[in-house]
Length: 338
Image (cartoon, rainbow, N blue to C red; front, top):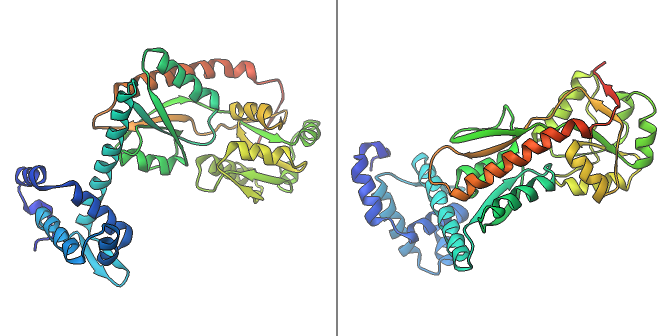
């Protein structure tokens, strides 16, 4: 059997997929990837192993290439299998969204949006953008998925999300995506209130700061990488965090409860943590900025009109945040690199 899809005429393969590919085939492929054993797949799908084997043989004949190899680690996708599985996941994600939309229409709503967001976004940005979208007569409902930018962009490419509000980074995989910068965030140091008062009395001493209890995001995040780079450029070894967390609220609570705890978060998030967690913003400013907040969407494929309306609302709210930013920054010492 040939191992290359390209050996088959594109139109012929497309016609066979349209007439012979079934939902049971997509579920079978998903189950084989998850279980790596035809025996376990048969148990999970409440059928016999010969029936599973026969269905897989039909699929491989349909694509004209083996989709899995049998190894000591179980069923492993071939290169062709990886491509087929990727498209399979996309189709299943679209079907789930289709079901959400039908349910939304049945309840008198326009659509259901799946939006990926990074943790260090101000809640008022999302609340205002959703409110503006609904104010235009778009009775949408929204599910927010919080994760790191790289994980969210993978889900966006797989059609599991309609758009992502994340942070740009040179190491992000931007294939199949388009992006639009919304606004820049200013980094600020937050601390327990008594510690913040002490730190504000004189210029920051970076060697002293490394001895405090740091609460930071995971290493893989663009903001954590930026903070690490800042310490390295200052000639100081980056502080090891005593807690790593993706939750801005949890970071705020940990800092507020520990007189030796500090963190660096975006200014607009820091302002929310002052209100909801009781932290204080240290009266110093940095001479560097965080990677900008960015809206990511897929380059091609169908897209809800509601996504365009939501994107326009995000632009409007972000412009308002950017305009207000200078007035929110109080006079303070700027911390330069030594």
